[in-house]
Length: 289
Image (cartoon, rainbow, N blue to C red; front, side):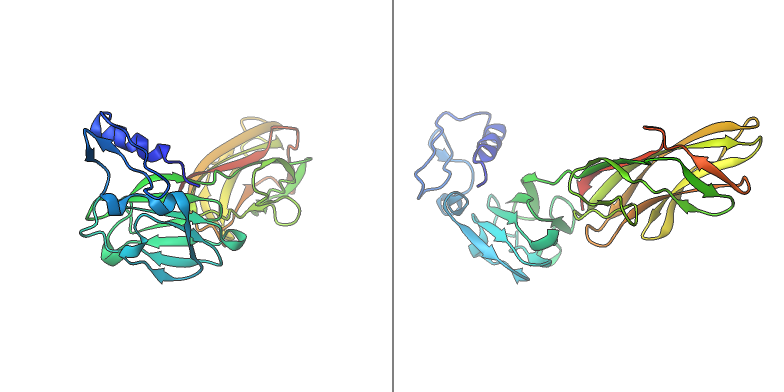
């Protein structure tokens, strides 16, 4: 159930505080007044259904004006919901609660080019929710709750890396994996199920590099290099060299995955340190798509 405090907060921001604040009956829904004047929507636009009922959505649909003031419970597989026309409907709200199977993505799409928070679409996955506010021309995000997946993994021992080839780092120790999306057994990759912009940090520590030899790491997205970090050259014989790199990526929340590879030019091979904290990989979601 969505918290009406969100709407009370909006009312207070927009009016400078009520002279009269009235919460109507369950049948009335949320009813906010200042000096006897309704300040958010009209009687017909109050958030009645958000308080007392949900509307089921199971697949592709174009919503009509009957959707205003209602909370839509979205289940099933991935699909797109087209919003009602914003024109002429300023001050109205629509809510969505996502309960799809296996983190399937629900895409909200503005009608005929109308935007949602300045973007043409907004994507949500299982357990997330959003309430949209219509200003009569476009849609704005009044409130939302988003997944915040994170992970932090490390090598569980020294790893051998051959020269003149890219080698994937086998991060097999999970210090944190909030949603179980990191594969620390077979592929050593992260495949998040929530679409968004993600930020990553990798640290790797090479052991015993000779004078003038170099070492670098790179992020791979879907099996191809997405960012190549700077090369770090050894200043003397038998040097231990550390490198780190931060990167952001847009991931689709279904098939996109991220890995870390390293490259070095000392034949025949070197070791990447598995000492706790020396070689690790972490990431988190910055925002949704």
